[in-house]
Length: 175
Ligand SMILES: CC(C)(COP(=O)(O)OP(=O)(O)OC[C@H]1O[C@@H](n2cnc3c(N)ncnc32)[C@H](O)[C@@H]1OP(=O)(O)O)[C@@H](O)C(=O)NCCC(=O)NCCS
Image (cartoon, rainbow, N blue to C red):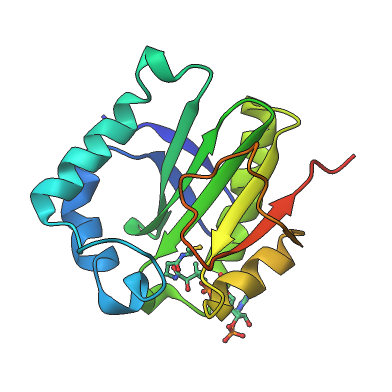
């Protein structure tokens, strides 16, 4: 059963499930999407199914107060990408991936505005961080549009998405 999380002007958002690996493997495991994402090797379909199953189950109790938030983005019944956020308490980190055919239409901007509104309801007051490869200009432009500011990485707030050389951005809750 598909769990709908909400909708914005052009898009709908469903809870990420293991079955989404089938469509998202062909859409997101591509050289264009992975260009600035530091991973040892692109995941196989089996690995992606395992990853999405783990994501949808949420973190083990030992990782409390960590929370995992995951959604797929749907446009006219087609899954076009996904959103994620991990909250660690007062801070957290976000990430977003869209299939390359869907870039350049403002879908990531629309989806991330919706995501921040939803996150503000689930985990109010969180300072959201994002880490970006310095050459990922599309992602940096998106973060600037969303009200993120450049920030130094803070060792007291470890970010699992951080790779050496990444730029960090933070978005403080709007008062
Ligand atoms: C990062 C990523 C999501 C950005 O996608 P995107 O389509 O450029 O982002 P947006 O949705 O904000 O779209 C902005 C573009 O749409 C255009 N646009 C059209 N209609 C728009 C609208 N209604 N609102 C805003 N922008 C609109 C903008 O002009 C801009 O185009 P341009 O870049 O040619 O100037 C995408 O490149 C991606 O998935 N990359 C691979 C994964 C990745 O690197 N993720 C980030 C890891 S940190």
